[in-house]
Length: 109
Image (cartoon, rainbow, N blue to C red; front, side, top):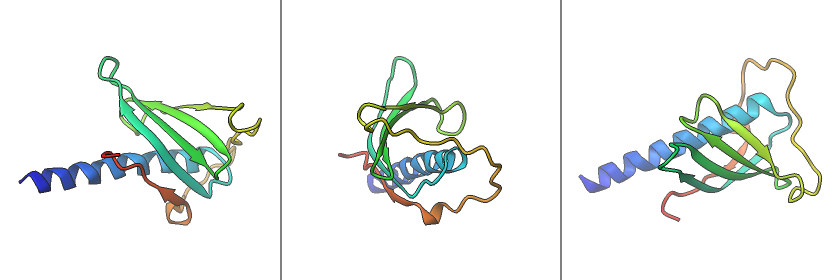
């Protein structure tokens, strides 16, 4: 029973990270690689705080309540050496997440 719950939790964690990958790929240009470096929930506010690196160049933080709506992206411009992600102004109907290399954060780290 415990292993089943643990497995379901890991699958949920991966789904939540996939939601962020989808969001970033729809809203920013030239996303090739995403590495999740920190994920934690603020129990007082209910917000999830996520740190990640995009294309090994852009360091960003994301705040969200449910991983699908109201995702707030903050660039760490100094850490990214003045590089910023470029917003995607085109409407892309089909995003191929499989073409993005994703390094997932393991909740047990």
